[in-house]
Image (cartoon, rainbow, N blue to C red):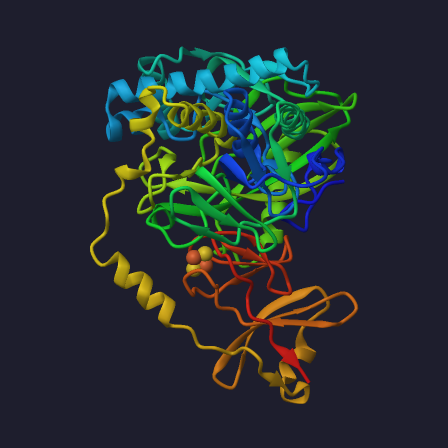
Length: 506
Ligand code: FES
């Protein structure tokens, strides 16, 4: 099993071993491109660039698939989370069509790779169904169908849906697909390496000097490159993008059914947040994969309850024989409905980013690969302007805001707290995490199964928000921009670059 950014185990984790990089021996120090992040965005982009003759180095802080690619539910759809009506309203009708054709091209890129490299990842063509369950949803569905058709993605009303749920109206889109994202990811990572690309796992980009060429350090090594791409889900550091991408958690389960009634197609209801369903064959076994109960990161007091709700929802429609996996993962919602792919705002011309994929990570990761590879090899692409992160207008006072947040650091480091004074510790149950007050300070305390206390300062090292306990994933999650830390304060996911400060007990 490979590691992921959570305590729970996704179906992809429990059915795949860690990726073994081919690289051994000494490393060159000069590259055309360095990519930070070994998920589907980084590897897909790296493969296109390496094949185009660029010398690429991919640096992953943990292991390939550690981030959201290891926790996705892997829907390949042109029916996107942001309705085409919203895209049309914010960006115009032509751009709504352009987004639709980008989504089609993304799925085609995956199809092409699977064909060209003979990838066994259980890729299956499918339809997508969206179903309404009351009058107001009927109206909304009609609007979505109208705008989806105008965008060039044919959507038709149908009488049947592939899951046993009651509905009032439903509509279908052809040309969607599903696959095993990790088997696909590992295969294209292998092709990237065979083409001469280098993958360094368990290595973190620790510093970047914005010179020409760029200097990129990992703590143990220093490299130069013309271009650096942050394919890290959200870029590190402090950037306007962090104010435009809102972190959310989504919950998923893999389920074996007693009646074999697995839906072949992709299916979505219309609640907010919505539930989603599909099936996937892995190593000859069929699974229903269902998800939902999304909420803003760090805003749900008891994340275990999300699994309980999801499970009872699944049991309403399906005959559950066994729940094999339950997991949650993170995504970033966007203010205006489209991702940010292109030059990092406020940086020199050499630093690029791809972030804000909403619930369409499998699609936009590949749109990002197409867009970035074209930009960096000097090809024209209409996607450059459409997804340009530079469309964000600088906010008055942003620099002061950053400065202010950076200054509000109440250092707690190095304090040794006398255990007998922390009476509250005895009231914490095993496997429980809690924010507690000690004198004038807040502490984030976790008691493990052996009753060992893990204590950290609960102020996020990114921009100083207080982290919150995520019981399902045994992590401290930041509600502001989605950084997550383990029980000892180690960064699990950015944008934070530094661990929480540990507090020791005497
Ligand atoms: Fe920005 Fe925590 S992630 S303050």
